[in-house]
Image 1 (tube, rainbow, N blue to C red):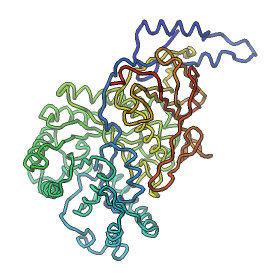
Image 2 (cartoon, rainbow, N blue to C red; image 1 turned 135 degrees about the vertical axis):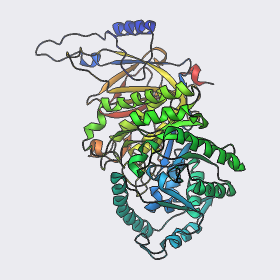
Image 3 (cartoon, helix red, strand yellow; image 1 turned 90 degrees about the vertical axis):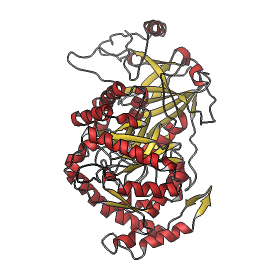
Image 4 (cartoon, helix red, strand yellow; image 1 turned 60 degrees about the vertical axis):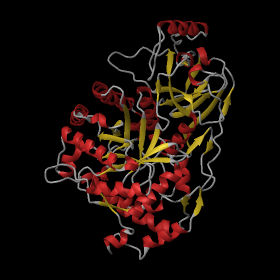
Length: 577
């Protein structure tokens, strides 16, 4: 019998009667294979019928739904000085409009000093490995290609190579800090803030700055001195910034042998709101938080107390999620459906608390990545990680999570979208396609199909995940009323999907992503409809050409692949307005 089995899936008894009739009329029936003969009905039994409710969206998300994050460690490893690179700005601009959250583990060790040159502030030392190094970077910044008021630089290859060597050494230091939970302070100068804001502004990203919440007074109240200095400097520059306070406050005891309870945390956020209102330029600035870690017992209790004690002062409630830790060494772990389903369970926990105390409050998923502690080399930076990333976007959208912030756009570790040679990784191309094709209006998906009867005691989890949105209004290749379906196929076999109901006999544009090269799921390159994706030059993206599927044709999803499918001429009522 027809079975509803994908997430998200919504249906009605009448719809499934129609699907059943379609199945019968299409002769999609189960027949026991003849002994010793070919299993003639295998493809028929694995055929999936797909329809989408196009009348109205079930959720409407933020236009900046897919957004980005940079960790403050980018100051320590030196990459902040290279954010003015033409190529990096171009790649970030490709994912706009979006938020850029400047925050992470080192948020609560960040101190702002209104100084022009960090090298002069700290003096000679291990980091000062090249005479006048930072001054050389500044000079390269002055020889800029100015476009729309943006400062874009072309740094010499020798300088980039020296920086990669420095970053590789610093990566070990940063990783050791994270694993030991012993962190050193990070100093942000005025010049560094200028470069950070220049990058965000040039790329069309709205900066969200995380303030240090562990800078505290003897009575454990929040010490605002560094924050006030930063606010005044930013206001003087008229920097359009939103704000956060702290990162994973539920982890402070292990990170700094200090704890902040929910009542104190709510007071700190109220104090920050007061500070913002006292600075005229930021009197209406947005404030986000409390950015708790994975919603386990301690984090859930902290969030509940925070919301109960006045946490509604924030404009959106933020929290974090990572699927796995860095000890995972097998690509198969990235394909486990049990792992993918953990996100839905955690979203439910967070939404329950927020809806109890502030039903209208938006919820954001911040600091999300495939793996904890910087990720795993040759796994979280490969094609395999894309299944977790797209699963995150699909499930979060279906639950109404307003914004998802990806950790990170660029920096150390293996969770990033762009590597240290400024080349896009598979998750970047996936994000670029999502931005261009997927709009903020989420549609209900209806699925039916026939499967074998499961063996007693065994749970068969779904390895085919289907989501649908209205096509992005920013994409002028498609008229309003088009819809975009995106599909994850975790099966080791091809799956056939037949468009039914309102989708029947419509022309479809296919954007099929598969790994490129001989490394399979370990590949760091991706192909679109059989063509490898590479930047043409520092300022030019490759053409993302769709493959047209004729009306009525069955969609064939290859094994372990990802596909976006735009239904062009459907004129969906819920997507026209």
